[in-house]
Image 1: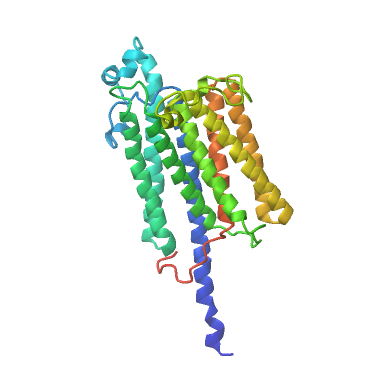
Image 2: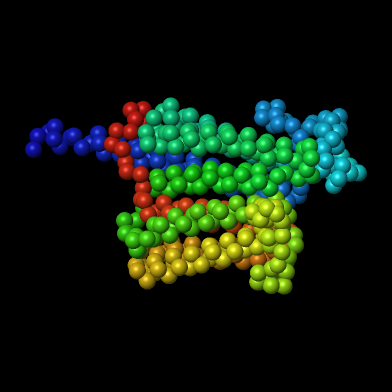
Length: 368
């Protein structure tokens, strides 16, 4: 064996070591982003539940970061709010101090969204310029950044629906805004999980991966239904369980015409469909757990299916509690936070069937 042959593996080993360090740094960065997104969705939920979302009637992406700093500026902002239907029909007679309460919720939501833009964009730019991001990840991460920017537009599109004729934002636009946030959240979790080591255990059954994908789709759809419930204040009525309006299947579910409109604008129907969605998620998660444990009880995938089912049960309990208590703020936010935890774990569980991204031997000449 020659000296050259014994020395040749060293550069490759050093390259892989650098990639491992880079991946760890990117995972930490994405973990911070995921936590910030979690906080953003909770603040957004509080903004909706406190009817604060229309308190800022203008879209100022740059200047809007500075809140009113004087009594005159507060009066000016309050006068703008007094021009919209929500003030005239819901909050007429509100004082400036009362207005400040709802203003700060919406301002905090927008400020946090702007902050996440910086938390994501600046490190991404640094990682790209220094060659720390592997080629296969560059465009997906840039795509997440672009979706985040578009989400800002969706947020204003949602707010604008309540400034002229309505006293609240459109439930359609609210659902679009929340689902887009969940897609950004899920994408970050997916990439982050792909950068860590995974078990080499095979899937318990030939259909395990498909059931995991089905669970992700069902949970995302259930969040969409929850947004419709929130947008219509549908959780404020029919606060009994398991019966709804005295029956398992209440009447007048299809009272509006055309019939399809009931699934988006009839509060009773929307709440009923949300309940049915929860039962579906529960049953699919239960089946996925049982089939995984029966086929391969010792695998990582089977153990994850048990944890996933446990989170589903906790989330169901939070939803029932919020409903029975007539949706107080703390219970509603716990339920919304639980939905994000469930969604994130569902993504991580699904990612586990695909394993980590393979290491690229030559992943950028500027790695540090």
